[in-house]
Image (cartoon, rainbow, N blue to C red; front, side):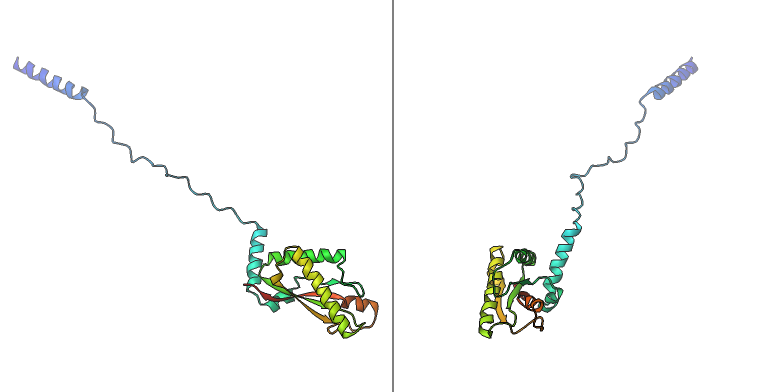
Length: 184
């Protein structure tokens, strides 16, 4: 009987151990933690126009006034014989010149009034001044600061063309816009 009791005890112990709690599975690896904030979106790409304008502005601001003058940013305007009145087509040219001055807000220009060879030196100097002043006043009315504009008259002393005919005289009756300085 002792043997039987021993066998029963062993079988019961084995059954008890086999039916007992099973060991828990190993804990999962550390959970993935989501970032506190979503990743930042990339900055918006600059448009080609924006980049070109910024680059052009920077490039011109670093150039000498002589280099800028040679670029021909400004167009001349012309006048009728013995007149200082702005013609409609010339107002459009002045509007484009004003756009350039607003875009490149560091440029200073001198408006040079010119005349043809007819008339006295004194008369043409006065007429050239009226022509330069007319252009200056119009640019100011378009929002260009007066401090960035200067006027000078050359009368008939600095002709563009030397021939004595109407075509040549018409080319000499002009205002030329020369880049002569920078504000910065």
